[in-house]
Image (cartoon, rainbow, N blue to C red; front, side, top):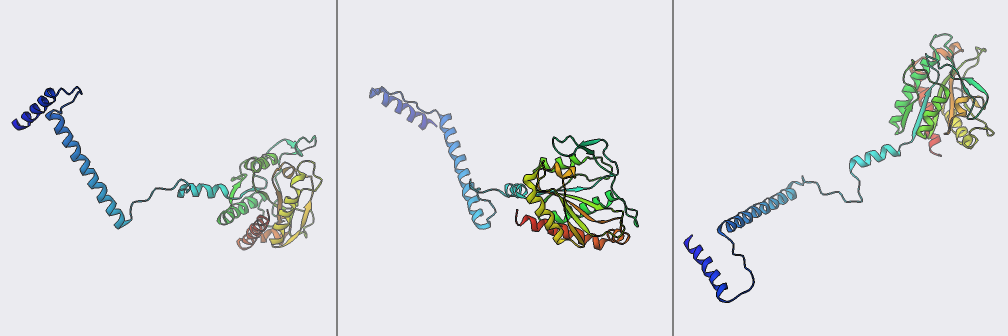
Length: 287
């Protein structure tokens, strides 16, 4: 310690004798100790970095940084969800019927009932709203397995929802297709088979989507089990209010004793679901 103090004294004396005008700060003993301590800590950190680098080369456990032009797994997953085709399924009717009336179409002075109770199985006694929700839930599962994003206009039989409100679900989502699930009824108990319903080319509310709606109707009917035809009409307010391709699928006649019973069986329900899903697939291939 005495030698260190002597060295500092001599160094100071040299600068004084040589007449150096530049101010020189001579480190104190405490500053020198602090500098040595800092250098020691820096050396230890460097050793740790080297050791970590060596372990990474051996085990490959440390992930490399993600380049700016590449996306992470979470970003890719979110992008995949965004890119999915959106399908809105509308299980027809409900146990609680929406009351009142609504315009036949946007700006129309003609009014129609906001909803109706639907038909009922002549043999099974099952109401249409139960069958339509049952099929829609099964169809949703199948379509999701095929990579679509699917939304139901209702998930309960105790929800009153009007035809316009149902269409607005599809419009607000800007859905790729809007498929309305129904079952038919007729005074003729021999009537049987499925039909689809779309608007006409001269529809005053949404004629611009007629081509897509007709193609969707045909595609579903082509893949379906027992079928009738595509009915073009502008009398369906739910279709008229839609701003996206839309069709009504009348799955069969609940007023036909045999077809009513058939539509309650798991095997036939699977055929109906697969037929509608296959038809949607076929439509999506071209639109």
